[in-house]
Image (tube, rainbow, N blue to C red; front, side):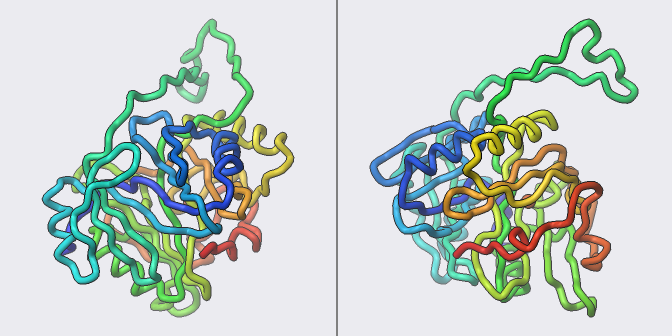
Length: 315
Ligand SMILES: [Fe+2]
């Protein structure tokens, strides 16, 4: 049995030497400022989470990932683990409590509970006249407003590690993540990628909340955020492209494992951030699968990932 079962990913924590530049990128990416202190920037989406992205002022770095505990009692369970912090009050906007742990690559894992929730930011989207619902928008013209995507929530974090097996075992044993799909290259026991989801029993969850890639470098491959719908993915792409100063990493396309329609952009320090919509949602009944890289790591449409995407692991 794992120590606890986290209910979702909460936020990613990065460092950057210029919070104004980071805020400009994240605003262009489609987030909204929740709070800004002298030392840190907290960005939210349209869902009620107080923040889904934290940037501390400092030399560029990936600090770690934060996860929601189901209860405060779960924080006390984690605090008993070797190397864990005590249950501590979070001295940051949104408050709440947390336990800090260190995963096998040395990155900080925060497990949090009781952070303030905010009123959702209203977004209005128009229905589509698609498929067997050809009159969903009968009599109403489609008129989209140009501008950034509207990030809804954080979806997943992706890390590279020289020890994929040890890393994934830690996340499963400590946070209760379960395998959705493992991917091998050559021999079937040579796992090079592992997609993991939250275990919320019968409740349906995103296909993956944590993906780990076997890589000579350890660090962050990308942070990933759900946007409102497919128009939002395309509008967000146009907006970032027209700015003319951001690095496009990969997309658009539709993944096979997870099935998201995706688009990837790097922040001004090269850290990849993903927009996606329409993931597969599965529950504990779905079990776990094993795929070859040739069959599993493909897109249903869209180009193959470029080298810069595959090898961008930020420490
Ligand atoms: Fe992703």
